[in-house]
Length: 366
Image (tube, rainbow, N blue to C red; front, side, top):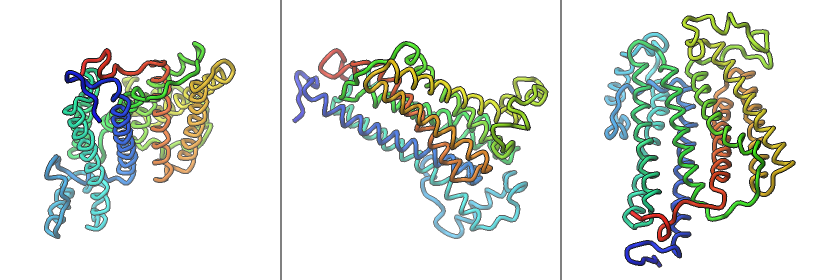
């Protein structure tokens, strides 16, 4: 039974409400993970420019007749990617890339629906505090901006390029992961259980530092994907014959800052170096946690170490195999799993034994 006193949800009902809301947020987070993986597959199959128009409503319906398919294919033939890369492509080959992109966009719309409708229901039922309501509204706004950013990314490849801009691709991927991070953080804050255990100062500092560092690494991975930089320098641990390439090659472009975004060698090199940094920090945190930490905090630190090592191994394998589709997708998925682990770890350390303000207590319901 819903326990309400004077229009306020009482503390006795909070646990079950928060359990439902948390389960819903976890579902949405998992859908975002699927979206990220699907987006990676869409990129790797060269499918991202197959749909040349943005129709938020009508776009949910794919071509249903031969005439519809012919019209869609004709629109694709007008862009540089077809003219310069796929000239002579058959209709069946076009359908293959079209279905990847259409599915990617459909899942994005589905995530918006799965998020907005339950949120509205929870709000109408009075299950949300004002604080939690604003957090959810912020998440909804981020999701909407992701759709707009996705089209802005696609538009960059429709006129003068055969592929989308690596800048916009990296931004699109990073925003998706920021959305995932935010959803995961809020869901973690609604957990009923109180985590015991402590971490010493160094391990705590690393725990908080890993969150933005993993996000930055994902952005760099987006640049690698956008430039197809993983198809070059497929050796490890040496790169271009050196562990540290010469400065002349790393900064061959002018102005020098451009190399960090457009020089294939530099982009891949910095992605490698940040990966090493993440692994080193994760190892230090895990070592310190094992020696001086306790409880769930120590377990999470050790888990992060194992995930970071696995992700590094997958990245090396992907590079040496020259980026096969299955390995590249696995690498992207492992990156998101690592982001989830460091996010939950940091949130639990931040919250301690506290939770979000609960309806019927210090928080004001909406």
